[in-house]
Length: 493
Image 1: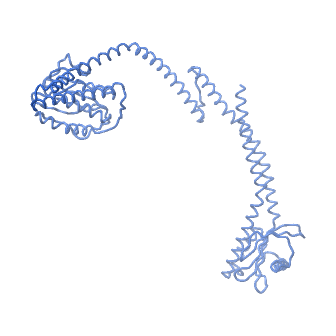
Image 2 (image 1 turned 90 degrees about the horizontal axis):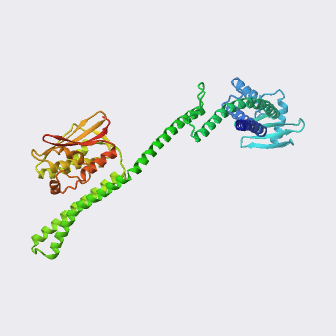
Image 3 (image 1 turned 30 degrees about the vertical axis):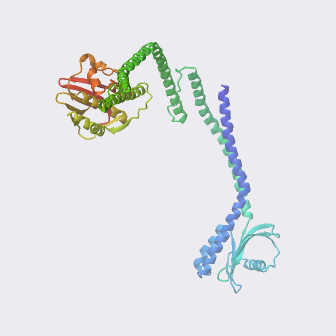
């Protein structure tokens, strides 16, 4: 309760201080600058009035009746006394009945006879504007005197007392209005501050309960208003629900982690099996390399043809080992998630066409025909470079195992939200007992055939790892005349 009172009081004091400070500043500015502003405004009225009269003199309208109304407006709107005297010392225009007195004052000012207290505010070749003090009347006024373009003399005068009186009235009125505004503001601020502080305190209580993992507490916004703080309260309700779900998920994840720890021994066994397989795969090429190298060293056959044959065998086995190591590194990165997957939208038709062009020479050398059944661009989502590796593995596998008719068919099937790409080759089907094992590292259905074309038994494992990183499916289907490998990708068709 104490916190609620403190928050309300702080809001009230702050808002009242702002209102009072604003009114006090305005009152200070009025007292300090209002009179000066009026002076500048009057000075501008004198200058504008002179320009209007001078323009009428240039047009020859100064003494005409059509200038009567503009002349009276200048005098009335600015509370200005004006007298215009011609070169023959006759009065052309006058806004006062005592024109003779003003004519005498003008002569005294122009010829320096009159001793008066004055301050020049503006001076140019045409006129002078002064702030003058009448000692006899104890009053101040602004006066403009000078000559028109036609040689006439003009004298304009306006009292400053009315300016001061207007400023004082304005300041007094503003003071009373300010006091009333402060009183009204206090009442309004008290009501508004309470309406603001109440939901804030409710949100504070809600956040404290959330920190204590009490997710039953909720904020109930006012249904009749659309305040931003109600939107914040709704967001905190959503945050409370999300936190509850997240904590539940974390607990589930913790249970899964416990299960993963229990599987550590199984992973160790898999690692041992992997090392055993790698050792087995490297043993044969290393033995061949060692044997032929020793033969070269002992000069078993001195003829160049034999030496070249020994060197070719060594280089061939070395190349196979190099390819297998590269594939193992790629597979390791995929399985352990070290290689980033960039999901892009691309044309699978164009990609397949590129892989076919790269493999066309090898297929032609073995007398294999490749048919691609496509009907234009088909856009899918995936990592384009990894998808290309999958298609390359499928096509390379099909070329190495194509028999009989020696035909390879590549086609895709449009599903609901996906596209299935399949690569079929004529030849012997995969034995049923081996179908589920071909995705395992180093597993070979026909070891002799695999050894013949230099296969390592890793290619399909890489395919499986890539598709798992996409969270998509891949598989193999046996047909009477061959084998079909397939993969699926997301599509927007």
